Amino acid sequence: MEIEHKRTLILNQDFSPLTVCGYKKAFLLVYLKKAELLEDDDQPLRTVDKSFALPSVIRLNKYANLPYKGVMLTRQNIFKRDAFTCQYCGSEKDLTLDHLVPRSKGGKSIWTNLVTACKRCNAKKGHYTPEASGMKLIRAPFKPSYIMFIRDFSGHINERWKRYLGKKEKLMA
Image 1 (tube, rainbow, N blue to C red):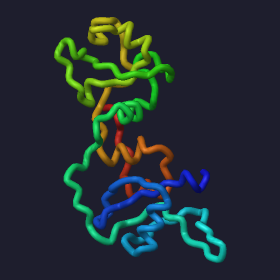
Image 2 (image 1 turned 90 degrees about the horizontal axis):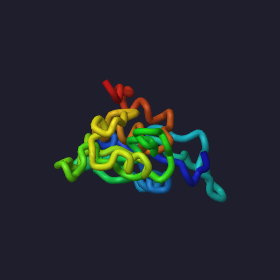
Image 3 (image 1 turned 30 degrees about the vertical axis):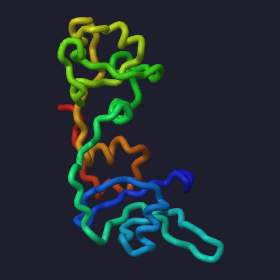
Image 4 (image 1 turned 60 degrees about the vertical axis):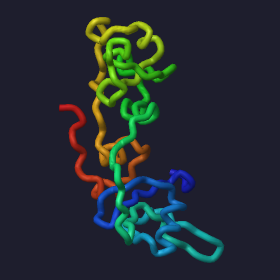
């Protein structure tokens, strides 16, 4: 992976996962002694006359109190959860959001009622539920936990992160 695209896992002081950031921000936090380097990348960060460890996992020196530690319900996060594929046909083109229970029938915009759908499948389903329209979901929608979202949906996962993110729980029962 190119150095410009390297990501760093940031842990709170109690080792709980906080977020993922670019290596530049992580390096600054370590350099300014606001964080401790726990794991470094194989590839060092080089200047003209010095070489530094490229942070892969860092831990903040002071506890960061976060009031809300959940995954925001956004269009992009629904797409990430559904791996940018239509949950009816598996297409990766012309994606949009679909309410399983249509808003016209009282459906809400919540994690368990929204799925990624291509425009064709969304139009085919229309103002009906998947059952009423004879369509089957590839995977039922779910609300990802914060740790699950960092681990599974933040893009490339570094092997060094796994011990800090816990075991991979089964997404669907």
